[in-house]
Length: 251
Image (cartoon, rainbow, N blue to C red; front, side, top):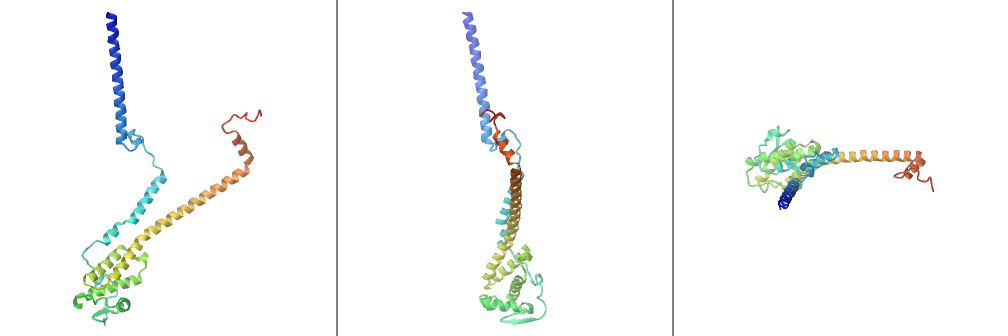
């Protein structure tokens, strides 16, 4: 009887140990599962250091550059409404003798520009209800902007120049001048200015592709030369890959 009781007691202890062991295993398993669920990267869950491939880093950098091209901060700044602080001193060649054209007087250096604007777009001041005594400065500044556009190449244009042109054109629009055509053209200049960065990046990528293609072609040439020089040996070696060297000894 005592022996039976002792056996039953030992059995209960063993059962408890099994349950405890199973519970622990379940707890560990659940803990690992939870960790995996909380951690997107399995390597991070076990503290395994991740090794980044150099080409991956370059690819990420390239993507970042493309992103900058697609949506630069300057584009946002261009469309921001700000008070204009442009004056005559921001342009050159506006001093000296003036000549009257219509209701306004312009520096002699601007007369050819005024005539070109008038011949293509007509009197851009006709829609303005502001007195010439008030709007003359803005008209002169606008013509100075157009003259700058006629003399500057894209690579000479800067963000400050673009923003200066924008301020003058917006001032003319606020006074009722018919100069929407100038703002539309300036937007094209902005996109072209931003596009310069894209062109440089694309040229760089094309150069890298050409270099890599030349390297691949060089390796292909070397491979062909090596194979032709040792074709018999290479073929013999391939016949023994993964098999004993006695292969073929006993046909």
